[in-house]
Amino acid sequence: MPLFLVTKMPKEVLLYGPIYSWSASAFIEAINESGTEDITLRVNSDGGEVAYGWGMITKFSELKGKKLLKNDGKANSMAAFMFCYADDAEATDVSDFRFHRAGYPSWVESNPEYFTAEMKTSLSRMNANLRKAMEAKMDIKMLEEMKGCTLDEMFSMDDRIEIALTAKEAKKVGLINRIVPLTPKKKAEIEADMSVATARLTGFVPAAKTNQNKTQNKMTLEELKNEHPAAYAAAIEAGEKIGIAKEKARAEVWAHYADVDPKAAKEGIASGKEISQLQMIEFTEKKFAGQALKKVEADAPITPKTDEASAKSETEKQLEEFEKELEARNKK
Figure 1 (cartoon, rainbow, N blue to C red):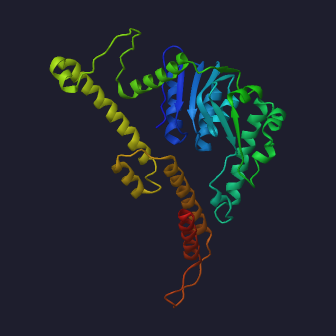
Figure 2: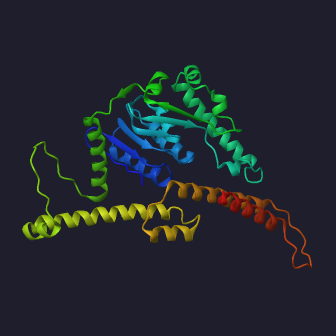
Figure 3: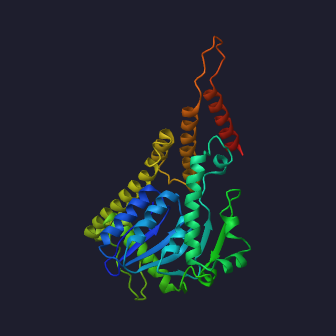
């Protein structure tokens, strides 16, 4: 589950996780909550759905103040394109970026029955805008020479090519302005942001660490309960808050896909397991598949009934072919 927070000084929004409907909504709410036009956005994300990414970029672009982006580890797909809209940007020396064109699953794009002209036009428009953002931000000639790949090739609808950049390469082509070494201090800063995010979600503020070098004796829960009952009660309460918040976030991710596959979403919630990236991809593919089938059914001609019990409509035949294709693909 992506974490979003706004700290008091300076104003920061933290994007750690995928870009989907719930995270885009939380992102916009976090910016509104900040009450300022100057924003620092810290990113550690694999990206996600283009349409929701556009919503985040639109909100980010509306701010009239200074906009600083920080790559704390990875900025892939739509998360990478967000850096094309920053006034100022930096990354740790171990961070990387990955760009590729927007697209549907390959099995959708390869089938003209599913990948309609309307969908293709919409996708081409999205990619045209993403390309403009790259061209406005980066030295494209240098980028193409460095990676041995042109933007024409990367944005071609005939292939799916990814361009990966290290922090050093990103700075060279103008995507970021600075590289920040990941020193122990910087690492602690990133970890502190995660702690603040946890505190925001759970209401539990972790105790501050001290620099005193002392030998610490480990205490069992039973000893803590007997010797420090108040501290034990506070720890149990804090643990329950964290557990409830984590379980709520886990269940919400599964529930997001209930309209796509109710049975799988219900089983996922009941399993107690986190949803995997592969499962997210599969849910997304089912979503597109459902849209494609509705399109096929809507466009299917009305055929006269026959007296043969085995006769099937054109829509039923297409549905069977589609199911066979899905089954064959899942067996690979």
